[in-house]
Image (cartoon, rainbow, N blue to C red):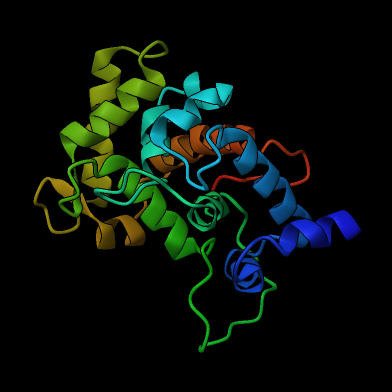
Length: 211
């Protein structure tokens, strides 16, 4: 207990961080230890290359996209608070958590999870998932398992199902209303597996969002 409190005392605004992410003090301490281990140069920040030490990310077919999700556009480093907030997207939705209108939406809410998954597809950040972007993700995840023709069929079927305004792309509103279940599930399975390696703890499990 003393060790946990000692570590928590090093983290600014830790109570707010736990409230925002839903992580317990024990989880925060484990994540802090993991962050410290990745921060080889002890700068208090991680760079994209620091994530290369995580085997599950290095071997993950969408590892580069998952690493990129830790960094805002133009940002070259990530601090501990941002590191924890990103990992919180892989926590299961806490349905028992009381809703407080005065508090920000939980990081692991359904909407936040969908936004996180959406950005893994929307690589050019134009607010839409094009057929080409969808195919890139599907190729990364499924290339060795299915033929190119099958991949294109999955992409076409997904676009057709979710593209409500018929502009041959999926906006976030469309993604939220009619989430492409198969592709979304695959993305979260890969992302959750990699996130477990990032967190390096058995008790802090992550789950895929299912439609």
